[in-house]
Image (cartoon, rainbow, N blue to C red; front, side, top):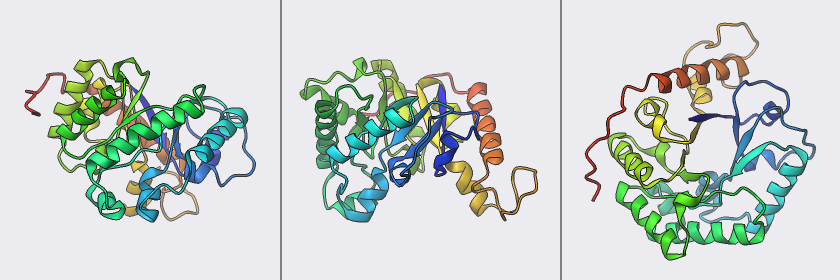
Length: 262
């Protein structure tokens, strides 16, 4: 499994601060007038969770998003893929948009089709969204009604993982989609859940290192620096990522759970 280190610090892309691939939001990246060639591979988060929570809709148009991605491929390079402008299905997001899960899923499929029609050359991945496990299966089936076979896609994003308190239904869901032949990227999977499902994913990302440092006590990297914590520290970020990857490698959960999603 390829593990992307999430970061809000854009210049890590070209200053060789991390030994890991990077996952970064378009909301951060588009602020930069000057960009430089990347020193590592990376993937782009569309910033949908923040945008939908702020505005209750997508203010960034598909045309504008495509223009951003074209710029990044030309000026930064080494882009593995970009997330679509998907519609998350957390209860707080649904409350903000005033829409249902089914409406969010339909909008997610149609946005991906729009983006691919605008720029078939760009590596924009489709995404599955939902809240309960069955929601994701219905979303998979919805793609099929549009003639889209997700098993033929190089990567399919799996959203809302980071918001779930219980990992058991996630474990079962990922097994089922893995058995379908879908190659998944887990958006923001909790580090304590990765040993259960990491071997079933093509890739995953996490920004939890910064949260841990910000709300923990004391410095985490073992070195001395002026900042009061390691929330922006590349040394701690790399240490945290290395530890997370070691957890995945131990993989004590190779058995398949009973699939009772339906």
